[in-house]
Image (cartoon, rainbow, N blue to C red; front, side, top):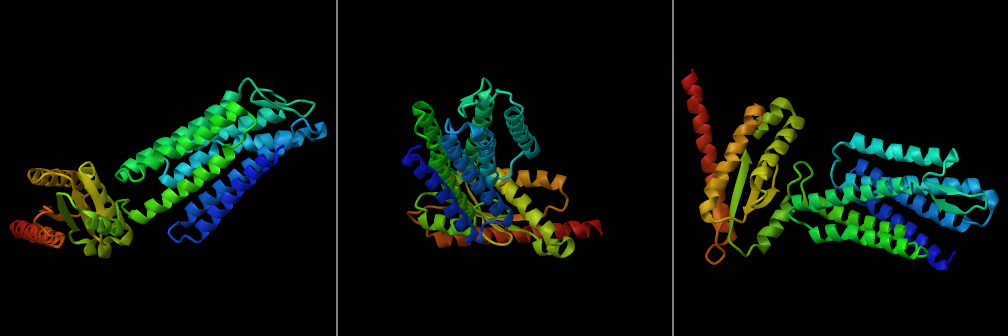
Length: 367
């Protein structure tokens, strides 16, 4: 076993230790997500060290055959779990039970085939040499399936956040698959775990950046992203402002949990209506903004689409509040951004007063 390979394993473990230290000091990472990252780190270190020890034992001492089998079982069982756990950091996994059930079945097959002397996935012969079995593809399928699942989720989430780091999201899996291809082509160059460690660290960096740019409740972009976007805005845009009506009464009547749920619902309606034409932000407690890349002519039609979507959602959820909205068109050659914001804000409050008067008239009529 070469010193080069030993150095690769050491670096893989060291990278995971660095990530654990970064996570421990990051207050933006929730407790459950920290536990997931710690689990990923332990699995990577366990997989890398198991592979390293198994390579050292390969053909060296037949008396270590059982330990060799245990180490290969650990390595092949843990590897497919890692990309799925990484996926759970990007966003909550749909059909989580089904996916984890499939992973559990794979682990069970690895253990049963290894210790019942069934040479299906792999075996270690009497001389202590490792061999792949006829059904090694079961492991390969589980591993590649996990990686493809992670890749699809990463690209999807990047698209949801307006192509944030989309290039990096595409390169990350490619980087890992290149390492896998090199290892399978050369046999003697073992860099899969090093590639996995670097890729996972980059996933954490990407995850941290997304967390800093997005609002935890609504998953829209946050105020910091909004201010950065305004400062960099140099092209024509339509700026929409939204304010949730009577939001304080929702908190007072139903509690803050219900209030948070309503904000999340409103954020979802805004995203569904505007994400294909612009960037959506939560900029305050019950305040939202959209910076849309549309013409002046299309501004009113886009607003009407939002109001229709909101009305449809309010039919399904009676507690969902009304939302006041105003907009103004920004022409950088003649407008200041401050004036445009003031016009949008003024229109929004005019809309709010109009809504309040309508509700009051409806109440008087019912009496």
